[in-house]
Length: 186
Image (cartoon, rainbow, N blue to C red; front, side, top):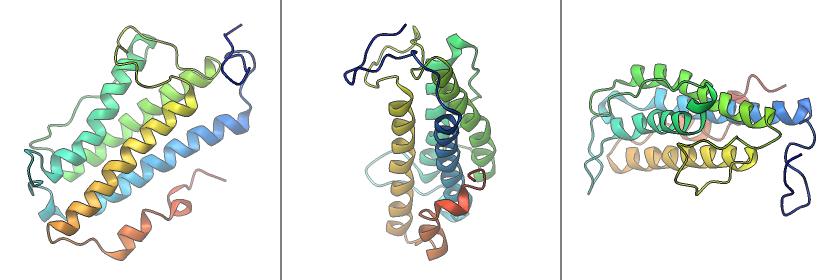
């Protein structure tokens, strides 16, 4: 039996319902689809643009989404048999390379969520997780990953506008059309 959380629920004390499991995985898949949707629609001319007051470019920010996933997969999953895909080169990656890379990193994050669900609702601790700022219950893990990507999607939209590449309404509005990106949800 696991220990009780502040709500009196014992972690690992009861299996997750198929509906809860599906909801968590579908939420991650929708988030991943939203990230790919935006990356796919960034104008190629925007890709090498520098972000003011930083050494970063739109390319490096887009690649960071994949590389951050890879770091978390390595940190939380490697010890449990989940392999992280290779990083993309933040200075040379093309939009197609980033889009291609996002697929296996999305599957890796999904595997971490499944690991947590199968372990009673909490991702098992790993030696590599030394930062310790993130509670490892599946709800917090999912929310953290989604918030991170949403933050950077918002940055990309704002930066595109500031750099003179205002994205079409079908793209910016499309970021809020989750039903259109959640074909796996029924």
